[in-house]
Image 1 (cartoon, rainbow over the protein chains, first blue to last red):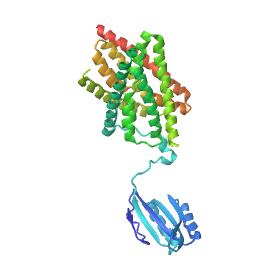
Image 2: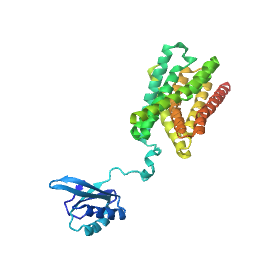
Image 3: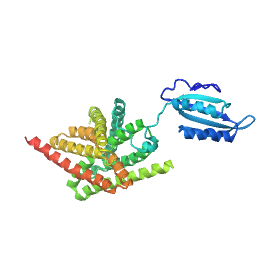
Image 4: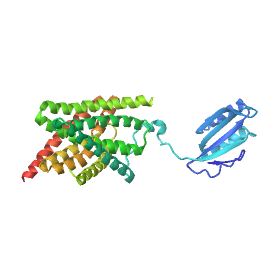
Length: 242
Length: 125
């Protein structure tokens, strides 16, 4: 940030990515309304006024913000309207530029598809860890109950818990409480690999061979419980955010 | 199962997850957000892969485990299917939500059984 002295009018090199802020210390509401009116007419990005406490009584401040060229064009006009009012000018680098469709709901749309080395590495790491956790739960369920081949409740548990977690995280993601890296590692890597569709279908056919009732219970039960768990996850995450 | 086999299985699952992102993400990107074709394609593809594996390598339980619980299980996903189905349902797209669940099973199951038959047939050659 670069700060200029009072009444130093030079905005200088209005490069793109630079936002200029001009602050005026005004003496009356009439002056304030006058400058704000002109700023709105010229379509300045931001024109705000507030009454600020300062030594010797409340003053009115007006703050104008826009990209450097736009504000540079506006400044002479401003000086003409309130000739003897000091103007403080601050130039700031733009660090985070909002997507161009931000105002039309861009923040609600899913992020674009990118497959760079960093993304793939996070997904890979999450996938390894997710599969490790799945194997742990599955072998645990086999250890606890010998009838696991007929009704593989370990995989069912993994799928239902994973559905709950992905729904909760997915809600946090779409509300922008989680970043891209968390999405890569936890959602696409860990949970995607933790839960499995192919084993679910295969186990349904295997279970069906032994008992049509258990096969149907496993196939339908996984789906029903998974959907309920995902619904619960979304509901809980939204409740937490409120 | 020894440590080496476990490591291969886990690394396979990581590779499967990367393939899921690249293939599924690319398909989703091309087909738009109206229906989660990417996840559906990935799951059906994974089902046929697992079916083929169990048909062609039925007597090799170690290989079946390494590939079936590793790369193929990491490739397919149950949780994303559930989330995307609920997202469709909450967007009042009930027909699409229904087709996503029923279609995944109705396509995955025959894909698995057909690939299983194909794998078994290959072994008889």
